[in-house]
Image (tube, rainbow, N blue to C red):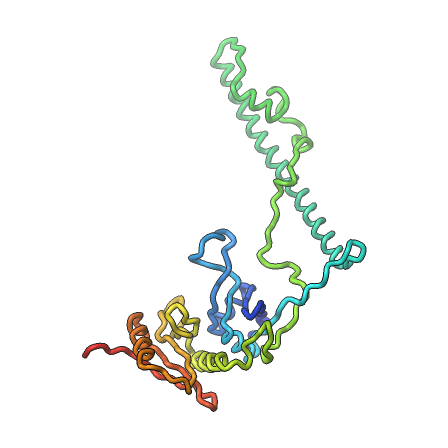
Length: 308
């Protein structure tokens, strides 16, 4: 199912899976029906929480499905190395620091040049307006000795009398404070550092789900619904394990609320009634989902009919 654009990189942090690349997040939704949940703040509106941005957090079941089908690989940051003293620093790290400093200096010099050019253009426009105003004043006043109001502003900008505008090289005296320099803030790490691939087959601190009975049940249900062509997302907002959509959740409402239970776990009548009424209140059908010993998914639908 790969489209030739490379494997999707999933970053693991303390048992949680994130996709940071925007193109990968789009591929997951459009090509593989994996929705996930955006959990990051938007760069331009970091304080609002109505619409979120990258990273895209994936369910453990979504991650395993992608890994099993060879669509994605799991990575984590390698263990950090102990800090060294100044005499034994890594030469490559020193080169990166020097390259960053050179890049910042080049950016500063470019901003100084552009700011000086803009200032020169503004002063030239202002000088022309002042000259026109003084000429108009001379025509209106006979023998007047008062200086126009703009003269003081002109002198403050040019540092000379209005008769000698504009200065030959205003950029030669222009100073742009370094603290006023614009600095680009990257939204993705330029040098992510060393990474290690995570084996999702083996339980570990980074990926503790392998072999867990609850995870196995949830995954088999998720896989079965996904292979039927549904979009499957987290169902926590409706009190279930999954929400099942007939199409993209941006265009359709969920049709089912999936509750995953072990086949050997007894359900009380109150739990069954509560689940049925919950689905009816939100106009969805509740699916009681379990897995047989051979791995086959079994579904039982519940609908609250009320008083007939």
